[in-house]
Length: 532
Image 1 (cartoon, helix red, strand yellow):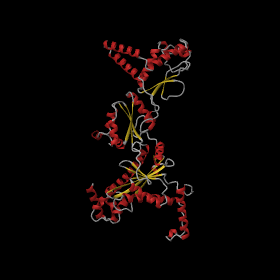
Image 2: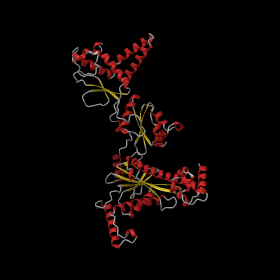
Image 3: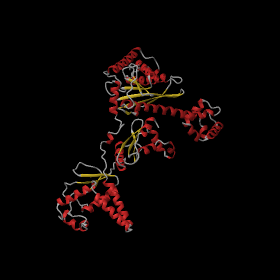
Image 4: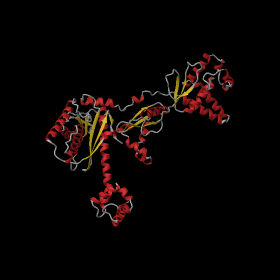
């Protein structure tokens, strides 16, 4: 648990509400409700309880980097808001409420010739009055049935019934309905019944509650427990359905921490004094452990969102030992040298494939093309301007890493591309033309955007490093087999692809590899079985 989450949990109230879990990019990955926010959210980060949870839940907890919350007045309100936000954000780890099904509502149009109550799941601009949504659909249906009997309302499905329908109307004959459709009452009289039912559904039902409680107690005193239980359930449904709930139309857009990429980019442009918000940002990070498996990552963000199709991974080739500064210089040089080469027109002589030297005239033409490309980068007016170049480069590190990256850009003629460094300890932003770093603050939108980009580059670099280490560990098992050299080990891996597949191979299959006879194949099989 990071310090930000720890402080937020300690400040949570013991009240009902909803919470939104976010990952390192600020994306909502889970929405939940709670009767007690502090108790519920703190359970996610209790190490002793995580042992019994499934892999999916553990993956969710590992991905949480921040969370937001919103207070409500009751648990039913929390359920309604939870469903609305799940449909709004479509979080990765939520299962319920992801479809287009909505909570049940009740509607009546007082302008109809004979107003009738009907259930609906979508609210339309049709002039009707809507009640709900209701968390418990069964309770809502029971209360509507109670209201129809209490106020003698129509319950038939025929919208505008006539004389023929009245002859077969069971509700009218049982006196449950005043039957306005055949003129038993005028429209104005029936409309008063409907308005009274509307007041009842809006919560003006205290008299009805008292009546049900009295009847329930009488039934219990007479030991008619079945009737008492039925009245108790109906009373509970009435209280549950007519309880006032809040409206949440604007809540998803006012929650704290809601990621707004365009706003963050604008704030970043103002903080760095850029001419326009950087629509394309590329970030670099170095990962190595004691100088082994030194790798780097380059992640691309477009319009403030990850552009994963343009992610790149690098293995450091020219740097010995643990030297992050030199490694950063190598990666920046390789990345933008390739872009320049791809941007320049491909011009070859007929003898290039034979390995002969490029003629002086052709070399002069290539150099001139390169100068035009660089001039286009400076002026942004040349037709040779590479569109794949970023609007901003982010380096993970302070002055040292930033200085090495700047040096490589200057050699390539790309010094006009804005470049910054982000130091992890205090989240300070280093700029080429400033001695002192910028400190916008941890809550500043620009800082949060850069953090998301930096953390993503860090994740990609670390995962690549771990992948190489695991591959090396699996391959190193063969190094302990007596008498095996690099050539025979390479032949085995080329044949089977991995040590795991080699362990599943038969002696005959191993014997087909060059350099392994029947005896050597048998010994290798026994060696692999002993290693498990």
